Image (cartoon, rainbow, N blue to C red; front, side):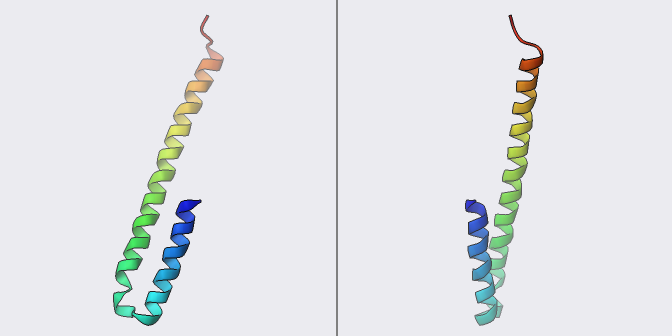
Length: 66
């Protein structure tokens, strides 16, 4: 939720910059791209962690220890 909120705030910042300072709008746009990359990295990491946890839980439920 925080990442989406940050992206919304930065996107509105970029659109305001494009209207008033078109020559300076590259830096905020690159910042938005960096945050999008970070969000994609977090999503990949979460998918990996939850897949590993699912495999561990399934292994423990199918092969219980005595």
